[in-house]
Image: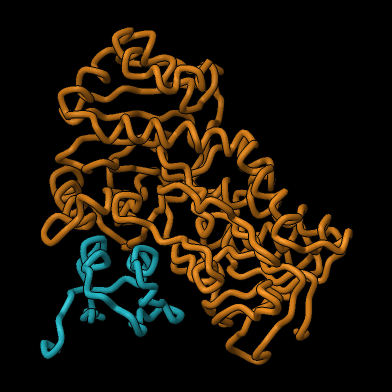
Length: 396
Length: 60
């Protein structure tokens, strides 16, 4: 490990790993630091991702695919299940990952591309010069590393950005507080992800079952931080559900986590600094999915950083090309739409959820996407249109 | 101040992200309180497992 690099990446999740690989593949000197002693663990994720989204970055490998998903279903508060099918028969629409192995593979690829990797190394604060970020103070063998650009991918905690003056604090209303068991010995449809909604089941969130084998699945829940408190936390709701639905199941892992569903800060760049992934608060606020968005912003940040380094301009203004690009991308536009969708979703009563889901027993989707699903719901419930005016334009 | 029940904490970092004072930090997998806690209780409210409790001065 040297004391100076073109790019320093803080955090070894998917966002940081893809950023490091991209920058190294472009010939830059790169160091990725991860504060934990092992990449990918402890996992803080439900591990689901769309298959096509994944393929933009890496070909699926059985080594880290726990299950192939062919359909999804939404369960109403009264228990009615609506199955969503991809019209294309045999279409594998999604994957449930084994993040412990997946994350390590992404970091291995970054290392193969030439990046230095330092685990058990915490970035304790930025090195500043003339108001610009020029590296980081580290724990470990090298106390300080200089860098032209620091790409921050430190996840939900997002401490580094705050130390650089970018406020990434998540309000309680914008935090999904989550708990999950990896359960085995349970009766599930092994190729179907299940999302259960309802204010008594998962207030302002949902409960998920993401298969990881024939009788094994991530069974988890996310509720709004605003709805959380003593006796009614994510874990309380999850335990209640598991007791009634999987009384004979065995939990072989328990994890907790926070998913930021607030809006990103006004700027995700500053002089010498770029934020990606959960640290940049670019999680999909409707689904809570963050793996793809982290990899997408990680790659884009590294590409823009590499261009800026080539032109010798590392000002916040030059790096802001990254901010502009992700906001204008399909991912950025989908985020903007889904904030509105979430605001609509969290206002619904259980009665409304029941009626919506009763309107169809099965929906065949041309394309497995949120807009496509909304479109189908609107077809079945024309009265919805009055509610949906705000984002009708986005759907057309 | 915050009282951290270390037998309950799952070191997930949710509290770190919601703390308005940036007064919490996960050092590797150990939650630590830094200077500046305003005892607002947001962390305790959002904790998925109930590992945090606000305690006021003299209550430690």
